[in-house]
View (cartoon, rainbow, N blue to C red):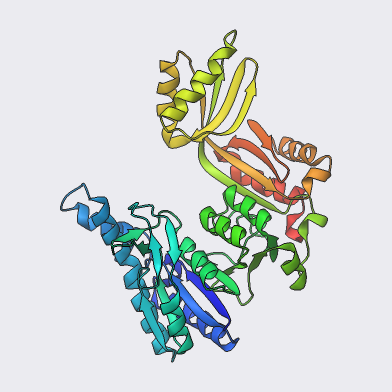
Amino acid sequence: MRIVVQKFGGTSVHTRELREKAAQKIKETLEEGFSPVVVVSAMGRSGAPYATDTLISLAREEYAELDPRDLDLLMSCGEIISSVVMSQTLRRFGMKSVALTGGQAGIITDSCFGDASILRVEGEKIKEYLNKGYVVVVAGFQGVTENGEITTLGRGGSDTTAVILGIALEADYVDIFTDVEGVMTADPRIVPEAQILKGLTYTEAAEIIQQGAKVIHHKAMNLAREYRVPLRVRSLSDEGKGTLICDVKTLAQEGLRALATEKPVYSIAYKKGLSQVRIHFGTSPEKKLPVFQALAQRGISIDLINLFPEEAAFVVDEKVSKKVETILAQEGFTAKISSPCAKISLVGSGMADRPGVMAQVVEALKEANIEILQTSDSHVTITCLVKEEVMEEAIRVLHRKFELQAC
């Protein structure tokens, strides 16, 4: 039996028209000789009748504080509703279908309500249904403890559900259906000429996602990379197979080129809503350690860190910038905070062996009169911090500079 796990997010199932498109994709998978296991998220986003945030708001109208166990019980409902409705859609399309909760699908977790870790998957029930010709529709984002308590898996939980089922069932592919046609050279809402990257290695895809591309949650991506499960990032509106994420050998077998041999940069990702923090230590460089310890002790995550003998610069989420300012003042330092900023990351596993990539970045942004506030790099990324107001223009400029429209 050849299995494909197909995950449909909330925006892919929240209307009848979209559910019908999803059903058509599932039917095509059956016709290709695969046995589909479907994972669904809650229908729609905040404000939609069955979205998770809407259900939480309903409970909080009665009492603001929700017990973590009760909250997980409530949050699981959106996906359960979605699984039943999607299963009914498949039946209308002439397919045998059954809806399962995460627990019924055999996803066993610890008891960390709100962010449970999966202990194991007991996939026998799913396989029994597949052997009888059913399409199994699983409620994503959830599992069950050893003693039967319903738990949720935290952010990206439905992606995690899909990948962990793919691992347990030894699926040929895990399909992640999103709002875009695949992993792109840039966000197509910013760069209309952005191209689909038809093939990526696990490492390349993980870096693009880590730097801000919102195509699959990074936890699920890391699981797929660890267990070598081929992923396909696809769209309901696209007739193609989107982006295949796998190892180099499988890419070659699929006839897909290795981008690193052709271009030093092949994708631009971004994160906005950031603040740059600069601290001048002057003649007291020994105070660097207490500053970073104080931030860590108060749960502040920092990024894009540059250290100099008399100065430090780093980036935090804009939402915590005031808190950071207060902490630093308590340590005796006045911080210069610039907000809002955005981090633009050029990703390419071939850039390490090609001199001049940073020079091209600086040249392109200088010609566009875009100031670079800070930089960092690794063997696969070059990151620039800019003012958020010029972020989109900077992305377009760099996309043209590296001719990514020709990928």
